Each structure stands twice: as structure tokens, then as C-alpha cells.
Length: 66
Image (cartoon, rainbow, N blue to C red; front, side, top):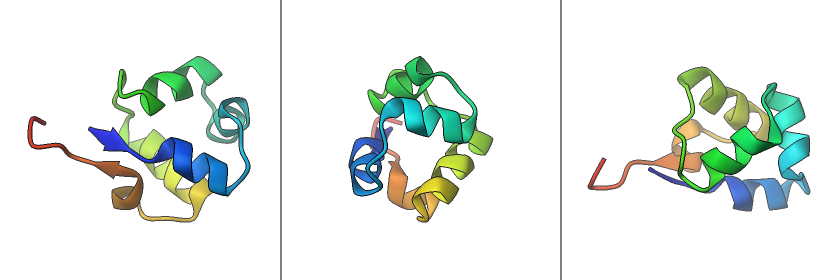
């Protein structure tokens, strides 16, 4: 699954730690999601979308192999 978390964080001038605090996870969890090593739950994806003010589909995109 591809994601644009790094780009969205940059738009809001947020660090991984800032985003982690806002959605209630560790910075390491944000890093793992951002690098595609971990697929977030629906709840986490929705929390990120709320923080970024964007639809979930704009942040996460399925790849053909998914």
C-alpha cells in the first residue's frame, strides 16, 4: 500500500512525533506506517485523514499487488 504521509506531514509542518501525539501512537508506529512496513487500522487511517484535513483515499492507495 502506497501512502503520502510524509508529504501531508510536510504540508502541515508536522514531525513524525507531532503526528504520533495527535493520533495517539508512538513515533515508531508513524515511521513504520510511512515506510509501508505496517498497514494502519481503519481508525488510525481516519485519524490521520482528520489531522491532514483530507480523504483517506488521498493518503493511502492500494497497489496492484495488494
